[in-house]
Image 1: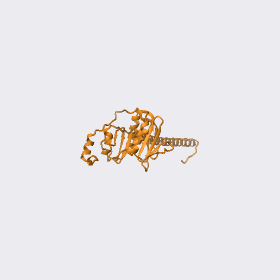
Image 2: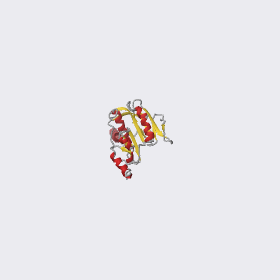
Image 3: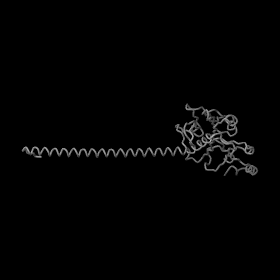
Image 4: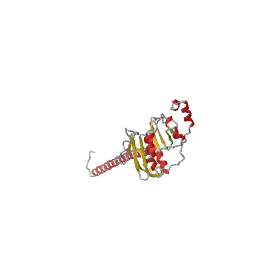
Length: 271
Protein backbone atom coordinates (compact mmCIF):
# COMPACT_ATOMS: atom_id res chain seq x y z
CA UNK A 1 0.00 0.00 0.00
CA UNK A 2 1.40 3.40 -0.94
CA UNK A 3 2.05 6.17 1.54
CA UNK A 4 -0.56 8.32 -0.18
CA UNK A 5 -3.38 5.90 0.62
CA UNK A 6 -2.60 6.19 4.32
CA UNK A 7 -3.19 9.96 4.40
CA UNK A 8 -6.29 11.55 5.83
CA UNK A 9 -8.79 12.67 3.16
CA UNK A 10 -8.10 16.45 3.33
CA UNK A 11 -4.36 15.93 3.03
CA UNK A 12 -4.83 13.39 0.27
CA UNK A 13 -6.92 15.88 -1.69
CA UNK A 14 -4.25 18.53 -1.20
CA UNK A 15 -1.52 16.18 -2.41
CA UNK A 16 -3.52 15.21 -5.48
CA UNK A 17 -4.22 18.86 -6.32
CA UNK A 18 -0.51 19.77 -6.47
CA UNK A 19 1.14 19.21 -9.83
CA UNK A 20 4.76 18.09 -9.87
CA UNK A 21 6.67 19.52 -12.85
CA UNK A 22 9.23 17.11 -14.24
CA UNK A 23 11.83 19.76 -15.03
CA UNK A 24 12.82 23.26 -14.05
CA UNK A 25 13.24 24.14 -17.72
CA UNK A 26 16.94 24.95 -17.32
CA UNK A 27 19.15 22.96 -19.71
CA UNK A 28 22.30 21.26 -18.49
CA UNK A 29 25.38 23.45 -18.65
CA UNK A 30 27.42 21.47 -21.18
CA UNK A 31 27.32 18.18 -23.13
CA UNK A 32 29.93 16.92 -20.66
CA UNK A 33 27.48 17.37 -17.77
CA UNK A 34 24.75 15.44 -19.58
CA UNK A 35 27.14 12.66 -20.58
CA UNK A 36 28.67 12.31 -17.11
CA UNK A 37 25.22 12.07 -15.53
CA UNK A 38 24.39 9.25 -17.95
CA UNK A 39 27.73 7.59 -17.28
CA UNK A 40 27.26 7.59 -13.50
CA UNK A 41 23.70 6.27 -13.76
CA UNK A 42 24.35 3.58 -16.37
CA UNK A 43 27.53 2.25 -14.74
CA UNK A 44 25.81 1.97 -11.34
CA UNK A 45 22.90 0.15 -12.97
CA UNK A 46 25.32 -2.26 -14.60
CA UNK A 47 27.25 -2.77 -11.35
CA UNK A 48 23.98 -3.46 -9.50
CA UNK A 49 22.41 -5.41 -12.35
CA UNK A 50 21.31 -8.18 -9.98
CA UNK A 51 19.66 -5.82 -7.51
CA UNK A 52 16.01 -4.73 -7.56
CA UNK A 53 15.95 -2.60 -4.42
CA UNK A 54 17.26 0.80 -5.45
CA UNK A 55 16.63 3.82 -7.65
CA UNK A 56 19.22 5.99 -9.37
CA UNK A 57 18.07 9.25 -10.92
CA UNK A 58 19.80 11.69 -13.19
CA UNK A 59 18.68 15.32 -13.38
CA UNK A 60 15.10 14.66 -12.28
CA UNK A 61 13.18 16.71 -9.75
CA UNK A 62 13.10 15.75 -6.10
CA UNK A 63 10.11 16.94 -4.05
CA UNK A 64 10.30 16.77 -0.27
CA UNK A 65 7.30 18.87 0.81
CA UNK A 66 3.99 20.17 -0.51
CA UNK A 67 5.11 23.71 0.14
CA UNK A 68 8.17 23.22 -2.01
CA UNK A 69 6.02 21.73 -4.78
CA UNK A 70 3.49 24.57 -4.64
CA UNK A 71 6.24 27.20 -4.72
CA UNK A 72 7.97 25.51 -7.68
CA UNK A 73 11.13 25.44 -5.58
CA UNK A 74 12.95 23.00 -7.82
CA UNK A 75 15.57 20.58 -6.56
CA UNK A 76 17.18 18.52 -9.27
CA UNK A 77 20.30 16.63 -8.15
CA UNK A 78 22.56 15.79 -11.05
CA UNK A 79 22.65 12.22 -9.71
CA UNK A 80 21.02 10.70 -6.65
CA UNK A 81 20.63 7.19 -5.30
CA UNK A 82 17.97 5.77 -2.99
CA UNK A 83 18.25 2.23 -1.62
CA UNK A 84 15.52 0.00 -0.24
CA UNK A 85 12.90 0.93 -2.86
CA UNK A 86 11.31 -0.83 -5.82
CA UNK A 87 13.53 -0.49 -8.86
CA UNK A 88 10.69 -1.07 -11.30
CA UNK A 89 8.24 1.44 -9.87
CA UNK A 90 7.65 3.97 -12.69
CA UNK A 91 8.83 7.44 -11.68
CA UNK A 92 9.17 10.69 -13.60
CA UNK A 93 9.91 12.69 -10.42
CA UNK A 94 10.86 11.71 -6.89
CA UNK A 95 8.24 12.73 -4.32
CA UNK A 96 9.26 11.63 -0.82
CA UNK A 97 5.66 11.27 0.42
CA UNK A 98 5.02 8.72 -2.34
CA UNK A 99 8.16 6.77 -1.42
CA UNK A 100 7.66 6.07 2.28
CA UNK A 101 9.25 9.44 3.09
CA UNK A 102 12.53 8.23 1.62
CA UNK A 103 14.93 10.83 0.26
CA UNK A 104 18.31 10.39 -1.43
CA UNK A 105 20.92 8.31 0.36
CA UNK A 106 23.59 9.85 -1.88
CA UNK A 107 23.47 13.03 -3.96
CA UNK A 108 26.06 14.18 -6.49
CA UNK A 109 26.38 17.61 -8.05
CA UNK A 110 28.59 18.34 -11.06
CA UNK A 111 29.66 21.92 -10.59
CA UNK A 112 29.63 24.68 -13.17
CA UNK A 113 30.34 28.41 -13.10
CA UNK A 114 26.64 29.15 -12.66
CA UNK A 115 25.92 26.57 -9.94
CA UNK A 116 29.10 26.09 -7.91
CA UNK A 117 28.41 28.69 -5.22
CA UNK A 118 24.86 27.45 -4.63
CA UNK A 119 25.84 23.77 -4.73
CA UNK A 120 28.54 24.32 -2.11
CA UNK A 121 26.48 26.48 0.24
CA UNK A 122 22.67 26.67 0.26
CA UNK A 123 22.12 23.40 -1.60
CA UNK A 124 24.58 21.63 0.66
CA UNK A 125 22.68 22.98 3.66
CA UNK A 126 19.42 21.72 2.14
CA UNK A 127 20.78 18.21 1.76
CA UNK A 128 22.20 18.32 5.28
CA UNK A 129 19.44 20.01 7.27
CA UNK A 130 16.22 19.30 5.35
CA UNK A 131 16.65 16.11 3.37
CA UNK A 132 19.22 14.64 5.80
CA UNK A 133 21.00 13.07 2.85
CA UNK A 134 23.68 10.80 4.38
CA UNK A 135 26.33 11.59 1.75
CA UNK A 136 26.79 14.54 -0.58
CA UNK A 137 29.48 14.87 -3.27
CA UNK A 138 30.52 17.79 -5.49
CA UNK A 139 32.82 17.47 -8.49
CA UNK A 140 34.40 20.34 -10.40
CA UNK A 141 35.06 19.29 -14.02
CA UNK A 142 37.43 22.22 -14.58
CA UNK A 143 39.79 21.56 -11.66
CA UNK A 144 38.90 17.85 -11.24
CA UNK A 145 38.44 18.51 -7.52
CA UNK A 146 36.10 16.10 -5.77
CA UNK A 147 34.68 16.93 -2.34
CA UNK A 148 32.31 14.93 -0.21
CA UNK A 149 30.48 15.14 3.11
CA UNK A 150 28.90 12.51 5.35
CA UNK A 151 26.42 12.97 8.18
CA UNK A 152 27.95 12.29 11.58
CA UNK A 153 26.23 11.12 14.77
CA UNK A 154 24.99 14.69 15.34
CA UNK A 155 23.50 14.65 11.83
CA UNK A 156 25.94 17.28 10.67
CA UNK A 157 28.10 17.05 7.57
CA UNK A 158 31.74 16.16 8.07
CA UNK A 159 34.10 16.27 5.11
CA UNK A 160 35.17 12.88 3.73
CA UNK A 161 38.93 12.43 3.63
CA UNK A 162 40.21 11.38 0.20
CA UNK A 163 42.39 8.36 -0.43
CA UNK A 164 45.93 8.84 -1.74
CA UNK A 165 44.60 8.70 -5.31
CA UNK A 166 42.02 11.39 -4.58
CA UNK A 167 39.03 9.07 -4.57
CA UNK A 168 36.29 9.30 -1.95
CA UNK A 169 34.63 6.30 -0.33
CA UNK A 170 30.85 6.09 -0.16
CA UNK A 171 29.80 4.18 2.93
CA UNK A 172 26.23 4.16 1.68
CA UNK A 173 27.00 2.52 -1.65
CA UNK A 174 30.23 0.71 -0.74
CA UNK A 175 31.88 2.22 -3.79
CA UNK A 176 34.60 4.74 -4.54
CA UNK A 177 34.06 7.96 -6.50
CA UNK A 178 36.94 9.38 -8.47
CA UNK A 179 38.15 10.84 -11.74
CA UNK A 180 38.93 8.74 -14.80
CA UNK A 181 40.52 9.75 -18.11
CA UNK A 182 39.14 8.22 -21.26
CA UNK A 183 36.49 8.25 -23.95
CA UNK A 184 32.77 8.04 -23.28
CA UNK A 185 30.02 8.58 -25.81
CA UNK A 186 32.52 9.84 -28.44
CA UNK A 187 34.01 12.44 -26.05
CA UNK A 188 37.50 12.10 -24.59
CA UNK A 189 37.69 13.85 -21.23
CA UNK A 190 38.15 13.43 -17.50
CA UNK A 191 35.02 11.88 -16.00
CA UNK A 192 33.64 11.25 -12.54
CA UNK A 193 33.17 7.50 -12.14
CA UNK A 194 32.42 4.72 -9.67
CA UNK A 195 35.10 2.24 -8.63
CA UNK A 196 34.62 -1.01 -6.76
CA UNK A 197 36.33 -2.02 -3.52
CA UNK A 198 39.27 -3.43 -5.50
CA UNK A 199 39.78 -0.09 -7.24
CA UNK A 200 38.49 -1.31 -10.60
CA UNK A 201 36.26 1.06 -12.55
CA UNK A 202 32.57 0.10 -12.65
CA UNK A 203 31.81 -0.43 -16.31
CA UNK A 204 28.69 0.60 -18.21
CA UNK A 205 26.91 -1.69 -20.68
CA UNK A 206 28.96 -0.86 -23.77
CA UNK A 207 32.23 -1.35 -21.86
CA UNK A 208 31.02 -4.73 -20.60
CA UNK A 209 30.06 -5.74 -24.15
CA UNK A 210 33.42 -4.54 -25.49
CA UNK A 211 35.28 -6.40 -22.74
CA UNK A 212 33.35 -9.58 -23.48
CA UNK A 213 34.05 -9.19 -27.20
CA UNK A 214 37.74 -8.65 -26.45
CA UNK A 215 37.81 -11.77 -24.27
CA UNK A 216 36.12 -13.78 -27.02
CA UNK A 217 38.55 -12.42 -29.62
CA UNK A 218 41.53 -13.25 -27.41
CA UNK A 219 40.11 -16.71 -26.74
CA UNK A 220 39.60 -17.27 -30.47
CA UNK A 221 43.15 -16.08 -31.17
CA UNK A 222 44.51 -18.39 -28.48
CA UNK A 223 42.55 -21.32 -29.97
CA UNK A 224 43.85 -20.45 -33.43
CA UNK A 225 47.42 -20.27 -32.12
CA UNK A 226 47.01 -23.63 -30.39
CA UNK A 227 45.60 -25.13 -33.59
CA UNK A 228 48.48 -23.68 -35.60
CA UNK A 229 50.95 -25.04 -33.08
CA UNK A 230 49.36 -28.50 -33.32
CA UNK A 231 49.50 -28.26 -37.10
CA UNK A 232 53.15 -27.18 -36.96
CA UNK A 233 53.92 -30.11 -34.66
CA UNK A 234 52.07 -32.50 -36.98
CA UNK A 235 53.91 -31.10 -39.98
CA UNK A 236 57.21 -31.39 -38.14
CA UNK A 237 56.44 -35.00 -37.26
CA UNK A 238 55.53 -35.70 -40.85
CA UNK A 239 58.76 -34.10 -42.07
CA UNK A 240 60.79 -36.09 -39.53
CA UNK A 241 59.06 -39.30 -40.59
CA UNK A 242 59.70 -38.52 -44.25
CA UNK A 243 63.35 -37.74 -43.52
CA UNK A 244 63.72 -41.00 -41.60
CA UNK A 245 62.11 -42.87 -44.49
CA UNK A 246 64.45 -41.23 -46.97
CA UNK A 247 67.49 -42.05 -44.79
CA UNK A 248 66.36 -45.67 -44.50
CA UNK A 249 65.85 -45.88 -48.26
CA UNK A 250 69.33 -44.46 -48.88
CA UNK A 251 70.85 -46.90 -46.40
CA UNK A 252 69.11 -49.83 -48.12
CA UNK A 253 70.31 -48.62 -51.51
CA UNK A 254 73.89 -48.28 -50.29
CA UNK A 255 73.74 -51.75 -48.76
CA UNK A 256 72.58 -53.18 -52.09
CA UNK A 257 75.38 -51.42 -53.95
CA UNK A 258 78.02 -52.77 -51.59
CA UNK A 259 76.66 -56.30 -51.91
CA UNK A 260 76.82 -56.05 -55.66
CA UNK A 261 80.38 -54.72 -55.46
CA UNK A 262 81.50 -57.61 -53.26
CA UNK A 263 79.74 -60.15 -55.40
CA UNK A 264 81.61 -58.83 -58.43
CA UNK A 265 84.85 -59.50 -56.56
CA UNK A 266 83.79 -63.01 -55.78
CA UNK A 267 83.21 -62.28 -52.14
CA UNK A 268 80.20 -64.02 -50.77
CA UNK A 269 77.83 -62.16 -48.46
CA UNK A 270 75.47 -63.85 -46.11
CA UNK A 271 73.09 -60.96 -45.84
